[in-house]
Image (cartoon, rainbow, N blue to C red; front, side):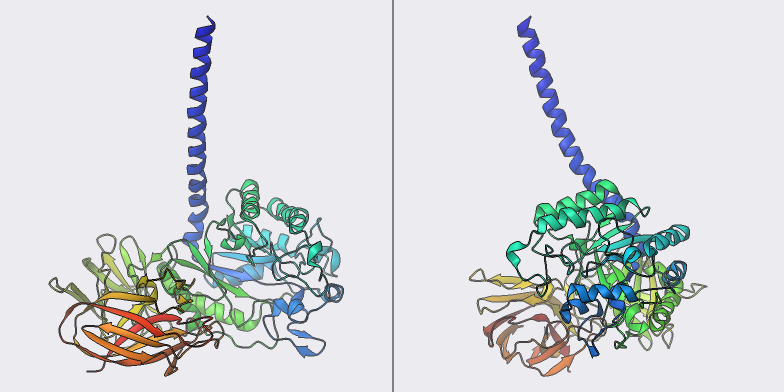
Length: 603
């Protein structure tokens, strides 16, 4: 009898073990399934509004009669303003012109589908009525109201998604906070207890935001810092998902604990990104309102940036910085309205779109896609016909997206399988239908099939991006691609890149290297000597400032063109090019920051 009971217990234990294993496996699957469900609306949206609003709007970039360099919301750190003095700004913060319904209307008319507003920025001031800290807009200002409650109500009424920005690591009001901390008020690092700050302020305030404002679409974290351990990042993400399972966690939670990847500020990635990603972008140079910053981006730049981001599979989060009175500046509203007009005609090419099928750049613009359509965003309008190489799929129809009648555009396709050349030419109107971005739609029978090999383009140019090069190292060196897709820390002559590419129109080519300065310009190292091997020829040249190149859709990273020599390619076909440094000069902090190698036809 006891023997039987022993077997029963053993069988029960085995079944429990199997069930437990299944539950663990099921939980893992369920977690990814839940992430996919959370991400569905975000992938459809593609375009959102960022709002940086706080006490920093009161000084608006000026402190004690002096304009403070840098972005407006960082004025406390830039000017080393003591906590006691900065806190007095709350007495002047009375945004009586704030109108939540108007803000939502501005965002919707721009074609945006969600907004993210600063609930607490690095200055530690809560823009809502927090019970955790009296340093908030309800308790510390003459306004005495909670704008986030009004905004939550307006968004719910309009069927608009609302998210909250929260600085989880940096807080200049708190001695225990991490990241770029307040060292002028709290110089003694030995007294810092980041865990205490996390448990006593961050998590309790996140609970307030996630339980008192209805459905929250995103918790947008910032200033990813080494202060956060992987366990702490995961604990914050778990808190968010426990309280609101449908709330997304942004990538700056740090330690890969977010639902998607967040690019750097104003960073438009050069190549396609494997993960879901988003880029936050300013309308001028700053995030929070700054009265002396009038360097507004044009609506053309904004529309093309958005198309470029969507063409690489990303979301575009465009920022406004309201004044201390609660007004979105008129230049911001005007530009958003212009973007909205374009979106009314062309939004189909952005909403719910995926990255284009080509991994490399095209000379006339970018492509977004759907399962049976390609959307050609043409920035450089051709005179008579638009030509594209590398598309193998059969096109059934072509038309302008902005044409209400969707009148077909004449086109023809041809192929030379012997050299792997596929060509599509589309007859186009004499002038661009839209000076910002004219969208040509190609209807296909299914998903686009393309030649993956790098192609010489119709203008005769061959572009070999660093992010598509094969990386070689004899010494296991440290050169790598940065977050944009540019080579970084290439400081060894034992490392090199090579590419394969296809030439359909042979001739003589000027070979040049495009390198990148660091953000905001400068901090570039040159003088490096390089060897280029291509088509049986070896060119030797110097990485020098021959020509400055500006990409208007990524204005904060200037490019430098260095001409390396000429090479003749005598016949169509497949070729290989390698670039290897023979010497790396300078302090070797950045090294050879390669964006691409280009070959341009000169005869």
